Length: 134
Image 1 (cartoon, rainbow, N blue to C red):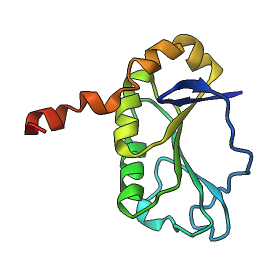
Image 2: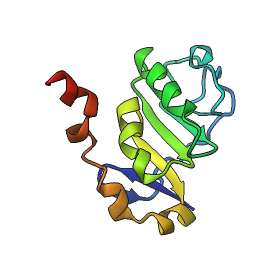
Image 3: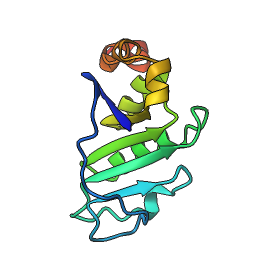
Image 4: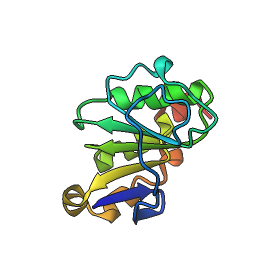
């Protein structure tokens, strides 16, 4: 069972629609993207309400780039990171544009909710903004 992490902590997965595997699907409400997806190849159709980006390893940061590029292209739907994202990366995921992170029960047991909530105030700890004096 998957656990969804948001700024409010752990919660169940409330997404009931099936995910399509093709990033160019025009009539699919939700798509899965592998970490090697080129964001410019993703069709941002009006029906698309959820994009889930795979993180095969916590050391693989390509998903952050995908999220940022999709947001810059104008995607406003739900954006979810799935896989090997650790609590220390939660603030980065939120800054990149993700709304939530999907983890498995094993990771949730190793990194309990309090570790994720410690990073939930991600806007208050923006290093670059502090450097710019904002």
